[in-house]
Image 1 (spheres, rainbow, N blue to C red):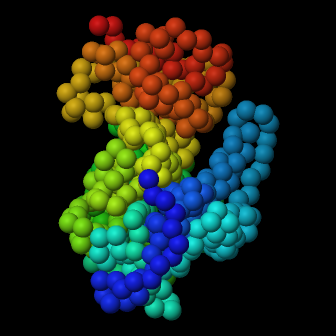
Image 2: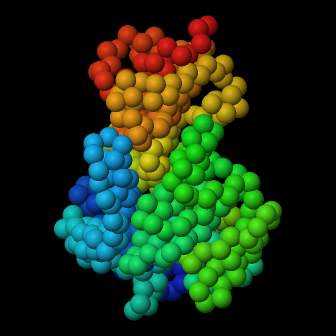
Image 3: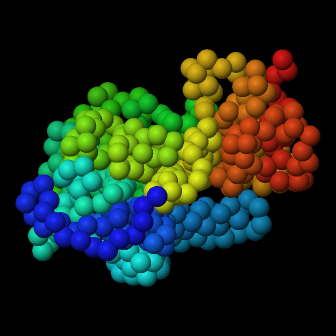
Length: 472
């Protein structure tokens, strides 16, 4: 356990004066902010370091503002369904209220003053700058005023990730968007090309299309490729029905911009043209800039190996995207709790990843937990699969238009427990909660079959999917 101490001064590895503290947290995204505050409230002298915005990507450029966009787009879609269900409605999309809400309500115009104040009230010291490990137990921070060096018995890395921009010929010299520019947009283009069909690309493609933008999404394989193939196929059908062009099975080969329009040449087929280009091809972290090599860690790796208490090396804990167990806010927060308890010497939980949930907030939502069918088979499990379509359920029939979706269960037949599940449909992410609990707690499928499922609900389709599991 670390005991709080007063600041001290000594000389660092580079000859500079060193400030001695208990802990330094590099990267104040959701998990970093949480672990730093927990340590400060636990009585430690904690320095939090962030070069961008305290709170990280989630509240300013990802989870929160994009879900505000999704919410607005979904309202438009629901209003458009009135004609089939309840009369007649005329819908006129306007982006202004959405942009204003993101600026004024969600991000404070991308000002993190409130987050910094929250951390300082918890007892932490905030330093605006870019931190790197300069020696074991030592962090050097590059600030606008110069470098500061901290010596700490605990260093926590939570650097998050930045948009990964592919080295396409011509792309670097164009005014392309990443999620950060797309979130800030105040006026919509007439047309948009989206490179990448993961959660970020898929959500932006649909929400902009619902505001009248002509969208083409380019995916080398399939939409939401980390999810079940059935989810990809259904989402492609929905996108096509909403007027979104899905170019799958081909890669972008080059980009041109003439000052008014982007042209993306393809590895196969005709080029794609649009007024704007959104690059949503993944995320990356510069491990070399973090200085992990001085601890013997691989700076070229895709992630940093950690143990069940988030330890990566002596005196170093790593949480969040770079820990390799999912680039999700909820994962970062989960790991923050574990790391903080370990640093404080508390007997706490150890990390378990068999039931990691994720949701893509398209319409229909794609909620997944645990292993896909393919992953379960690759792991050598004896797999049984049960699937039930939401439109065939009573609630799905009642819902009618906009009822696309399904429940898919992946069972380890030898143990009789679920190891994975997908809940796709209206409120698919909410229905996922029951399945996440089942996978996490390893509830026997025989027990799940004896539950009472409220009628008529979307989650009742879980019972039907259980019935669809083949018998042994």
